[in-house]
Image (cartoon, one colour):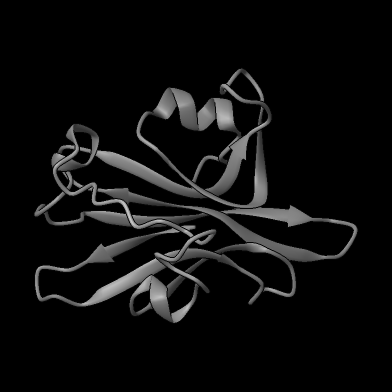
Length: 136
């Protein structure tokens, strides 16, 4: 799973779950998700879903990003810092892309960060509930 992001110039980046940090976390990599995910668009593989026109994304699409931050977590036992989420900010909107998922289905009050799922969070209230650390 992941999220593809395109710049106005057409450059593509993919936010996917990976292990570049010697432990699993969110990675922002150059290129399309097909370069990083196996069986993309195939049966039993991640399905592409176009969200450009979705109301939750539309206020960010085509806007200049004013700030991009990384929310890190620290595994003190292993001494490893791992990116849990990236925050994309425009004048109008803030969106978090995180490696995490609800603890149960349908989504409830408990979420897990650092899983092999990628989720998008559209409100500060849900970001706090999910446990995405505040960016300093």
